[in-house]
Image (cartoon, rainbow, N blue to C red):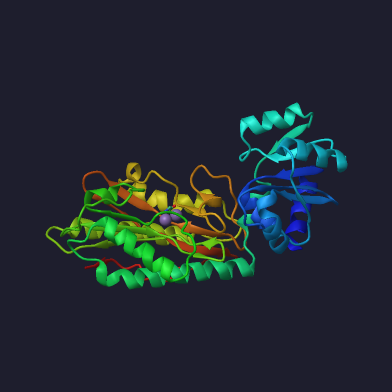
Length: 353
Ligand code: GLY
Ligand code: MN
Ligand code: MN
């Protein structure tokens, strides 16, 4: 199994001889297990997957290439037994995932612990051809759903209605779960980057920000389109939209294997800064996406990530003017030596309805 081998290589590189995986998404990535409770202990030549009685049958179907054990006792005791069986001196664990209480329980069992971050996440950031195919299918579902929504986008409809309707189209496309609740934010509310839909109705001259994601085989997509409702004095709004679109194009052009993620962020940010809107673009330019809605690499000025071939991420600059409205345009790309390949394909020209 490719992922198991790649993980062992990472562990060897990090000098880790025993590793405990508890993060459910990382567990799914390495073992295929989709249940809610389980863990894996892996060394350079042994491995044991453990879950509870509820998942006895499911784990037999899903977890291939690992020994499976059903836990009968308190989890820290089960872990201690395996640590002893495998003669693990120091057990690496996922520092981002474990609660302080659980950490303390493990310590009390006499396990020597070594916090680690990013081991599996680093692997997950680079997608295989199969993963890119799943993500692309999630994108296509999301795009068909949004296309289906078009006749419903009009004055008088509420944000809540449009959000639920788009959610319904996504479900009808076959999405089993959504990465987040569909965001629909209109008028001055479009200046809230992560607004939840309300009962506000769509009015003349409103920006409407739609931010939604699809799913296929456990992989997600994420995109945003901002549309404008025709009305008086929309020239400043049109200009704002074109500014964000230009910023996004510059960031996409900066995508290439080997560049720092922060360089992609800066391509959008410098452009927006120079227009005088620097303070109105407070979030990062993008994030990786796959089995989780947000994952490595992070495309921001703070990021230390380096772009590799096959990384899939969003490019989503925005300008948010309090009391006036906001624009965000979000697309998904896969990085390659020759630049960005677009995964999303819906038109990006301003749509005025
Ligand atoms: N909807 C979440 C995001 O765009 O990151
Ligand atoms: Mn996003
Ligand atoms: Mn989004």
